[in-house]
Image (cartoon, rainbow, N blue to C red; front, side):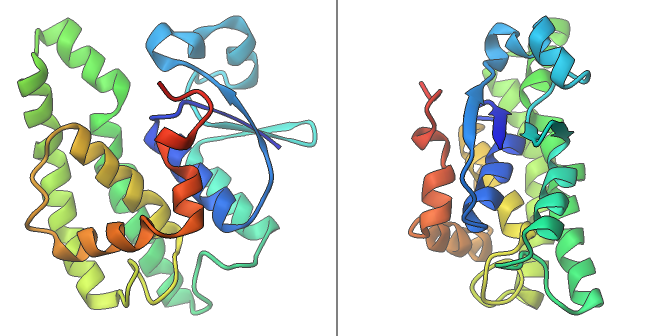
Length: 210
């Protein structure tokens, strides 16, 4: 497997976490989003959307991190990142979607670039924009973790929801979002900080990191 990603991309980060939790070996190919490498002819041939991550597997290319994570779960079911019970699986998927659909897309690199270039936003304005979406999303997630978590987002082992959460906390810190109101989420971050899979997937540990 070859993972095409960018060290600081939240979507690539969550994919690395899932790969590490599954104990899967893969090669990495860095795609520097800041220089527009995602729009190169070579990369667009892999992913016409010109976004990361893209995962090459046996002649196929998978795109969109939710699809990649679901493929990993179906193809490499152990250790499981979804509970056995269908209702519990729906809860985990909902927590993941809360981040992946309602928070992350509004504070990724291309949105920040548009805010700066089209609307003249400075860094303080970009930070405020990110907080506008991260904070209410985290409020809802904090309540869900209190309801369903037992050390992780759901239960006592990492799930797909944690693959989404940790990169989003990393992003929140980059945008100077206040996190004191989310002790449950911060406790998961502390636990993840000592977990080998999350350590290996951290942006600073990637070969293309600054």
